[in-house]
Amino acid sequence: MTLRDSLKLYFVMGSQNCERSPVRVLEDALSGGVTMFQFREKGNRCLKGQPKMELALELQQLCQKHSVPFIINDDVELALSMNADGVHIGQEDESVEVVRKKMGDRLLGVSAHNVTEAKLAVESGADYLGVGPMFHTTTKNDCRNIQGPKVIESMRAEGILLPLVGIGGIHLGNIQDVMEAGSDGVAVISAISKQPDQTHTLFQAVQNSQLKSF
Image 1: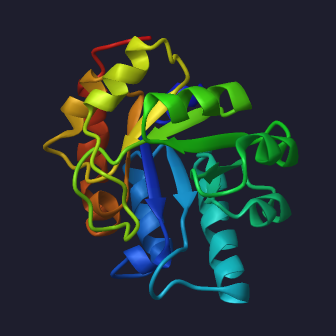
Image 2: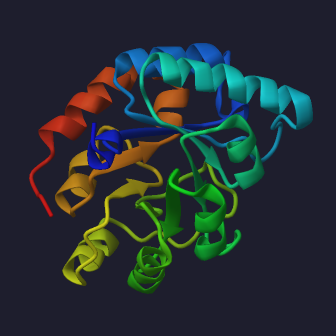
């Protein structure tokens, strides 16, 4: 599976996003068609220390069982210690160049909110971009201004060909807008963590919306 294929339905989750066991939630999501998973244990009620590591290992084993890339949010040291498939960093984290050196040939995703950030991430060694927020979201407390799918269109228009995934407030009703703008897939949190039984329907919506290629 190519990286673009892996980004089709990208599930981002930590225990704080779940109303039941995160292990069960991920198991159901993977069975429903999730193509990449990012462990994002941040915010209120998040686990720390040994409990965080134990949950990460359980979730990693599930991803390995389903041959789905397992990505760690922000924590490069944790990603390396677990031999995770990659790490995803934001604009406020370590520089892309520094993380690229640490991660070697593992996947490196970078959050980008505009064309300037996207171009810099590409030049610095990112493998893919997480672009957003697409729509209003209550999942992230430090959320930037809503960009909408047009920011993806502008990135593509400026010649950014790197695989990218839209994130932020995405649900069944607006997937097509994100895909038609030029995204390779959608990244969701609560759309799956709160209702994992909807995963297959989301996956089908992404498949049916793939109208552009770059």
